[in-house]
Image (cartoon, rainbow, N blue to C red):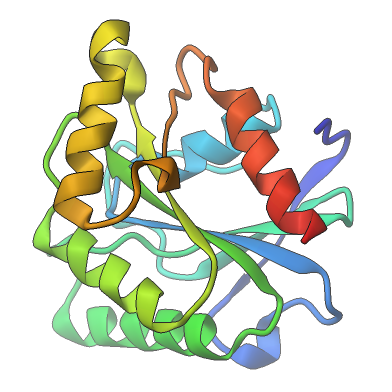
Length: 194
């Protein structure tokens, strides 16, 4: 898929701020600093459409990125970052939960996990929550360029076992080398067409 004019549309904290209409949404979830912004930039071949930060936990709102009016990438606030006050964490968690449970436009949820590390308790909790929503999802194993190519599949298989999902639900990805961009677009296009 070629996206010609991707643009940031809005940051939202509650339902009234979500984009109107029935445009499908591809949702990105994952812990802080797992590479959600880098993923968006890589997929649309832009350097700074989505702002990346060296300081995790900066995103407090749901960010909607319009992909040629065909669909939105929705970047949810990262979890597992303790610098936020407890009150802020609760506020962010409530806005995320409300969105995931009530938003009819959600077409696919992509859970990003760093391929190099075992999933955290927060990752597993989020995956279980996603499963409970009965929405379609995949797991994107980010930073795949950081391990040897010959070992990528074994890492994917290990992730699948730990997360208790089929290995064909897990897709390696690298924002650096862009090696897995096409296969990721294939999955997204398939979900948008169904």
